[in-house]
Length: 614
Image (cartoon, rainbow, N blue to C red; front, top):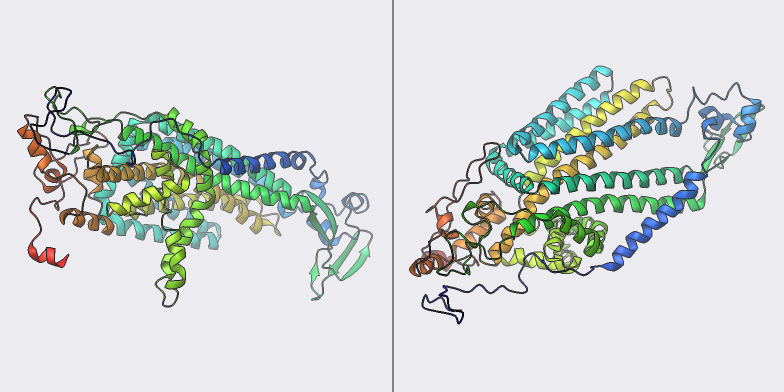
């Protein structure tokens, strides 16, 4: 393609360079998208239908004698018939004062699980709304608040005599404090990265509402799946304990039993129906698959919306291939040029894509992506061992393309799961960029704070449950630990969903930055400036590759040619990164300042010694 200023196309205007988009370029797909990975959509819908159909008899045909069961009945009944036990030994049938573990756990879970879900939903809404306005303040408050909550609950646990809970809280609080102190040296780039994510969410306020809606619907689906699983496990009958080899009757409906090891065991046991076990397994798979799918839906919706906002301009102002003519106004031609505010994306289009066109891809990602990433990390770590590397190399190569960026690539390009994984992996490899994560610090800090807050909440639940069940000495500890564990998992899931939206914004902007690098353009200078400041070794390699001429970024000759043609000169990425001109600031939220330029893009070629070393 000619870059001569005298080149004049047939349509009458003088142009420096014509922008010819590549059909295979990694850019946002605005066309109507066909359905992808339809078989996985069918698989998930079939499993959901099985769960729904099986829950009807499980919910309707509940055990009518559940309220009569007691520990004394299971331990001492000679007939294992609770109705007969009620008639003959009514004086021993103290279900209210001698309840079983399942009875007390159901009572406590009915109180604490809805309270946990409601607190997680309200906290997420308040956090996301405040984060879009005060990202730096809220980031510090989240870290400090998690430490204060951990220390306060640990002190309360020690005061109440719950030593195990206090020790766990102290250890986790100390670990989180060490992580926060160690990452304090990177507080400036971390704050700028989070400010950039907050700006993206502020420009797309409906995305936050859509994410909260996805979370609410997801919690309802998970609650239904958990109720179906719990009811299926408890759908059965009481029979004699077949582990008992000897039974001794002290009186009518009063005795004891021993096993082969001469140990005293309960004479009766609750037996779940065989088909209920099979249904409980299907409900558990549906529960786990739905939990992962809700997270993938959030990531896809965020990536689709933010990519629309990022690629809103068809011809970025800082591109080497920007169309420049006599009638082109200065600064026009780009959505991010000159620090202009980017347009907001269509959340409705994003939801239509994730719930219709790419639902099968997201179902496949929810089912397999976490496992594939775990296999890749494990095989990569074991390959360093002598004698194991050759055996695991094919497995590592097979799973090398599966990263957290696969649903983001599917949202941007509209491709199926496997082609999207291959496309984003090739994009990042081709441009010498980190292929599995931009930077570990944002996810590490946010997830550690979320885990500590969830642990502190579960510690509070443990203390309150323990104090309200002290009179039920045989089951007080199991019930308290089970209720606290369920509350911890539910609160952790809600908090990770919330902080995951921030990380989705960061990762989407990173993939858009990679697409800019690949297509030789700078659509959003503020995004490029912040990402180039991330202190990552892989990004440092990328910057060195830019210095030594292996990059696909624009060269400084484009701006000179444009100036010779009479157009208004604009700062090229080389000039910006070299310190010749400051990039536009993205201030306006929580006192955010313009990022300082980085060295590392000199216009002169490397020395002979460096070229020889390369």
